[in-house]
Structures are given as structure tokens and as C-alpha cells.
Length: 412
Image 1 (cartoon, rainbow, N blue to C red):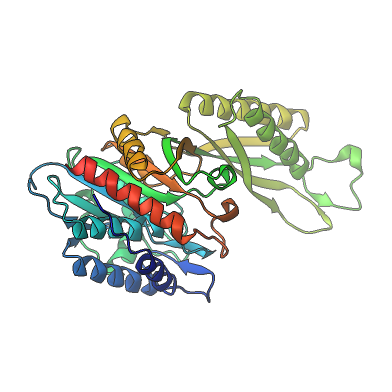
Image 2: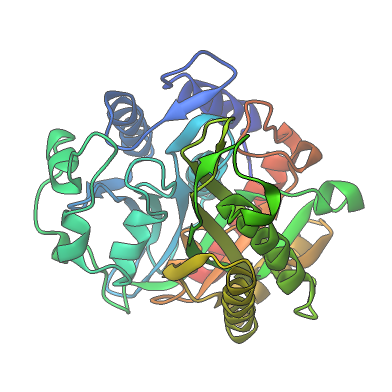
């Protein structure tokens, strides 16, 4: 099949989408359900309509654009990603998977391909946790991983609930209606920039994902004893931050000691009270991210961190309590989708390597209800979530070609 991928058009569409932003270029900020987000969605809806796709949105704003197949009663083949962007980020995270999937459909249309199964472009709502503090909001609801009743009461930093925010963005209906039946999709494929350096370093144009790591978030609260920084002598102190410093090193040691390179641990937040230079810290709150592609191994590391933290606090006569805020399960890619991507790469004459995704994506939750896989393309220096995030036009074109060929195989 001769695929006419119009790379210049895709690059221009990525530029246009990046202009829907609350901050000046080259940075992009596009927060879900804001006026900027609504304008971007309307523009994308128009592109899908121009491609003769049937477009609809659900109660939380997940948007579906369907190219109906000759057997529309069969489970569809899906592809897509997200367009919301964290503050001051780049223009390729998620968006390549949305506009790339749209171009893959258009290229198949131009080639005269007629799918048996319908092919559906899916725009997920709020993959980023920026507004409501939870990532993959749309795909969690689609997959049944998030209770609709609890989701309705999620609040943003200004106190607005999810129900209020989606109503302001003109999305209505019961959140319970968002969940998809398990036979809605025959397969789902997400195209994405790698957000890491491996493909570029190894000069390999395609990455076929075999597993997606999932994070667990651990909150650690430490209680020490405050006091004047000059008046309390060192032997008599119970400094909450020094306990936290030892705990942070314990996080690193536990991750390194797991026996696997795929285990990572990060202390991403460390809030010190009262936060004055001349006051001994009396209280610290830490947020710890631990992730792996192996659920049991990740959970063993979590347990090891909690045990070691308790021992450190006891040795320093500090109080400590822990709470696991979130612990999603990792996902394995479907052999059906991986095989389709391998064959599509070979058909397009492109080398590939198999790899794991250490960042999590909407595909992590789609894997609960569909055969799912991911396709990575290189990004310069592995940079993402920054204004200098960049994917070269030829890499985008390669990704669209392989995605289109895989969608054709899965939809036939």
C-alpha cells in the first residue's frame, strides 16, 4: 500500500495546536476545560469533520472520531492520545499521537484502503494531573478504573469540582456513562514521543513498547520539634528535615537495591514547616514516586521504604506516618498489537527496538479493556515537558507510516 503521508501538513497542524496556549511560544500551557482547551478541541473537531469522520464526545470530554468500516458492528481499532499540556511545556507530548493518528487515517483514505473494522481516533481528557491532581482522568473513567461518584467531587486549586468544570466546558451527562464496554475496541495503539534518550542515542527510528510502568505515590509525614536555630544546641535537637533527608536516601537505596534497572524512586516534594532560615524544622511532608513494570517488585520496594523510614524516625526520636495515595498496576502490551507494529515497521523498512515505557500514559488504563500497545518515536536529547521539547518531521512521518500500516493490519 502506497501511503502518502503529508508531513508538512502534520507539522503545520502541530504548530497551530501549539498556538492554543496560555503562555507565549515556544512554551505551551493548555489546561483541561479552560477556554484555551475548549478552542483547541473545537479546532480539532473541525479537522476530524473535514476528514469525514463521525465525531462525538462523552460526559467528561473524551472525544471519538470514527472512520466507519464495512463491518461497523465489529469492535473497532482505536488510536489517539491527549492534547492537554502542563504549564510551560512543549508541543509534542500527546499531540503527536492525536494529529499523527488523524494523518494515519487520512493517509489510508488517500491510499484507497477500506477498513473492515471501524478505525477510531480517541482524544483523551486530562492525561496530565495539572488541574485535578490525578493523571489519565479520561482513560481512568473509560476503563472503569475510577469511581464516577468520587470523580465528580474532584476539585481543582480554586475549589471548582470536576462536575462544575466540565459543565462550564459544555460537557454534560452522567460520569457513569463514560465507561466503555470491554468489547468496544478490538485493539488500541498509541503513538507518542519517547520522552527519553534511548532511540536517539541508538539511532533507532522506532520503539515498540512491550510494557508500561506504573507509579505508586507514597506520602510521608514527619513530626520533629521546632525551636530557635541559634538557641537549641545540636545534641538536643529533633530536626524533622534531617529525618527526611535520611528517608530520601533510603528511597534511593531501596530503588537501587531492587535488583532491576526498571525500578525507580523519586522524592518529588519535600515541604518544610515553618520554612524559616532561623527556625528548626518541626514538620516535613514528603511525596515519593516509586514505579516499575513489575508490580510485585515495586510493592516490595514500597514496603522496604516504609520499614526503613520508620526505623530512621525511631532512631531520631521523630514521629512518622505514611500513606499510599495511589498505586496503579503496570500493564503489558498485547502480543497482537506488538506483532502488528513489528510487521508494520518491517513493511516500511524501518528498524525498531522493543522497550518499556517508564512514563505512564492513557494506554496504561486502556490495557484494562482492550488489546493495547504503544509506538515511540525519538525526541531530541530525550527532553519532554519543557518548551524545547522537539520531534523531527522525519521521525513524525516514520511514526505515522508505521501507525497507519499497523491500523490497516488490525482493522482488516
